[in-house]
Image (cartoon, rainbow, N blue to C red; front, top):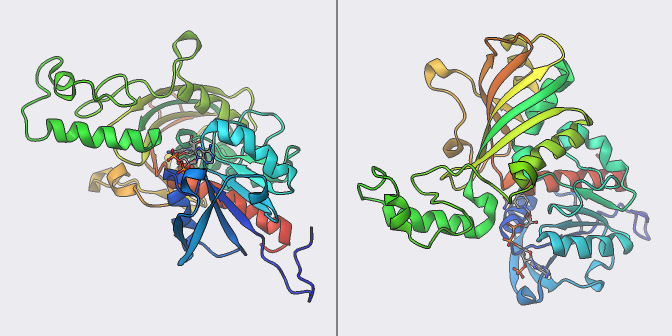
Length: 361
Ligand SMILES: NC(=O)c1ccc[n+]([C@@H]2O[C@H](COP(=O)([O-])OP(=O)(O)OC[C@H]3O[C@@H](n4cnc5c(N)ncnc54)[C@H](OP(=O)(O)O)[C@@H]3O)[C@@H](O)[C@H]2O)c1
């Protein structure tokens, strides 16, 4: 495919956003409007339900078209922000039409022929894509992996033990609606002082969660898999290994849902091949692309979801050397699950592909 028009002028690649009307798609249109504009046409695609609807991207109104084979005509890069089964069916169709598909769903993440890419960590992997598909990791892994990749490059990672504190927008619109409704039901009451009082107040309105999420934490995210692990916990393990290129990395995760709208947090115990110091870790984290170090607890400075939401970087604080292990660090990490955890990383991957296709970086 040539990236020059008949007069020899450079042609910018055509981008399709599949799922432009969804939670991630909406954030994506904002991100595409803010970032350096590397795209020619941006085509917006969703289900037939949304066809004809007009959405704003780069300050212009663009009409949404229904997903079909023809919708990929002339498309160079197609982002998929749609449910797993829609990606599973349509990303290969886009690839067969000559587009590079960048998929945000879970459909292809562990496919050995599909790279799983975080540009700050393994941008090179995006070039090897036998199926014409590149996968975007899940939001929990993405919330910590940029910081972990930077520390791994210096110290050599050997083990991760993490606990997540996951926001409800990670469960889509239904999760956000559920938390808002439950908070409305308990706000201004004395609830939260007796066993079951919050549960009785929210009644049947548990939404996508197995327990109340207002005034509570729920030690279960995703679906139940073998031996008591959840799908989210297995994703953190499997995806961290694949992104870092460490198939034997020891990873243990406990994933917990908390009453936060957007921005996932994690506590991380990271063990390395080499001895660590907080000073060196600070130096690495304060210079790593995509990471902000916010670590001055004496002044009350550490990242929290309420301060991080709506921002792009991975925020790191509470960096300590483990008291019983000179090779291990303890950290607290926050990242916006809808930005770096979803739309932003997909946009960055698409930009890596655009640079490769056009030879312009
Ligand atoms: N929420 C997060 O934090 C997060 C983070 C990382 C990854 N993800 C992944 O990103 C994907 C999108 O998630 P979301 O939260 O944005 O979901 P969502 O709000 O439910 O949006 C789904 C999108 O997919 C479209 N769609 C659904 N069925 C379709 C079909 N049959 N044909 C064409 N388009 C169809 C919808 O179009 P209509 O509006 O026309 O129905 C809508 O644009 C999912 O795979 C999710 O797992 C989400």
